[in-house]
Image 1 (tube, rainbow, N blue to C red):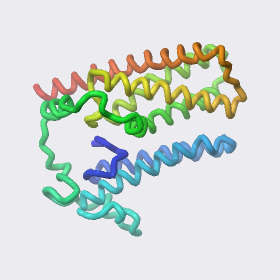
Image 2 (cartoon, one colour):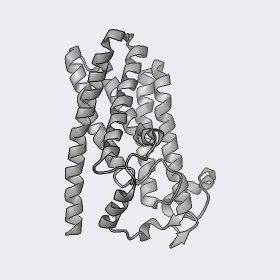
Image 3 (cartoon, one colour):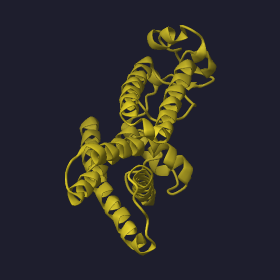
Image 4 (cartoon, rainbow, N blue to C red):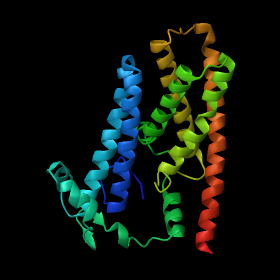
Length: 253
């Protein structure tokens, strides 16, 4: 489930589509509430809304594929009812195998993932898969900056700590994707991308909405902060490995 939520290829079950719609609805309501609270930050919310729409359309297309139809069928009025309640086509169709009938064991899945060449994923592809957790992390940081009445040092520490659960969320969302490797340079690259993009977006927010400035002499300090964020992603990654390695061992036994 949720093996590649931003891809338009493949098939998904009605349960996954229903959960996808629920996730979209909850996040959209949350963003709408924040938009009303911060109307001047409209430019900041546009990318997040775009990612949500992309996510829903991609999941809808895969659900249409499971019913044996083109992804454009999701735009037909009331066809969404069939997408939620009708069972998918059995066997293999032109869009792929029935997700209910995929009988790949966890060991085979792990072997297949290890066969992928490390470091071959493009940076753009990695950023697309990490975009939702990063934007959620930035929204959380923005809420802390606007509502938390603490000293600058305490605020800085709280924002740093938000990286651990949000990066863990990114790992969970991509758990079944072959793009995520348990070990190796590929995973380190993902963590570097997450830390760097998150920090850049937070700095852009502070520049635009909190009237801060960037000083050339402080560039070294900025890089140190990115390094701290990268170190924090290590803790969430280790937690991810412990949890899912234990679950895989339990499954095999």
